[in-house]
Image (cartoon, rainbow, N blue to C red; front, side, top):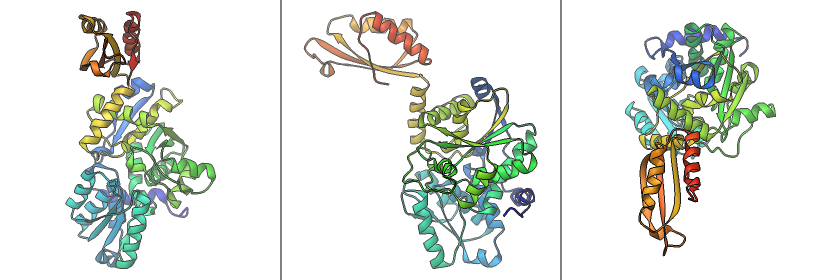
Amino acid sequence: MDKRDHLEDIKKAQANLRGVIKKTELLYSDFFSGEYGNSVYIKPENLQRTGSFKIRGAYNKIANLSADERNKGIITSSAGNHAQGVAFAANKLGIASTIVMPTVTPLIKIEATEAYGSKVVIHGNVYDESARKAHELAEENHYTFVHAFDDYDVLCGQGTIGLEVVEELSNVDEILVPVGGGGLISGIALAVKSVNPNIRVTGVEPSGALSMSKSISAGHVVELDSVHTSAEGVAVKQVGDICFDIVNRYVDGIIEVSEEDIMEALLMLIEKHKLIAETAGVLPLAALKKLNTRNKKVACVVSGGNIDVVTISSIINSGLVSRGRILCFSVDLPDTPGQLLRIAEILTKQRANVIKLEHNQFKAIDRYSNVQLEVTAETNGQEHINAIINDLTTAGYVINRIY
């Protein structure tokens, strides 16, 4: 593969994609820049057609198939975004397609894939199990398998993101990229390092799915026993062989982020930029707090935005807690008049907005003389929470913080 002209191949992919994809323009973020001390730009692939960057690699791969391969049809396995990319491309190019999806795939992604005319097969708990099933079906039916990440044509398609970033922001210092199987960061690294080797390309993985990090540490591709992360788009047990080689050679480092970091980043993206992204998509934003650099130009690839409303609601709540925007506590009060008023006065003084309040005698330790009060209030950060708890404690109350 090293004998190929990677930049030329990625430019050919760019030509294949012309008129098919959106050229997502960088968005400067006042908030993330101010929060983390760098000039932060968002590459919003969540606004891409099909809602994800995956359309780039899928379309480039399928556009390069021979007439015989097109006639026999194609198959792939995916947690959703690659599936929609393949389904869209196959529909546009008039090719029959089958998509194998794991059982954890959100319903919104299954329905969107079917809407493009693909046949969907649900199999396996994670991507790797779905992939094995897809390969079996490919052999049985003589389909061409379109790999989600470990394919040169696919990663060249993803590499067009890197070209767009450097074309628009030629003096970018670092690009942060989500890492699952490794196709996105491999393509971007090949593109960016071909143009300017001094631009840092850094991957980001969730702590519950460190497949690339562990492979780099071991010096070879390793398979994780299991993955545990809300970012299902990067929940991959084993990275691609081609991807591993490229990352090992061209990528400058990988940052690990926690589930709390991810929830917080998603909340801030929604609140400050009015943009919806999926959990895997905000990994680069979650990694900004881990950078040791200051006053650098940093581009964050927000890779996708396919997320269901129920998940958004749950994540927003988690993010609010993480940012100190919600305080929930309980306190046992004497069952005498005026106690609730005293608590309310303290909260009013601290300008905490009460969202929910439960006054329950049956929850108190001594229910014959006490009543338990549980309060959920809107707050303005951890310092505000500390001030509220301090005032309540000074007033003689024993506070049990629930979250």
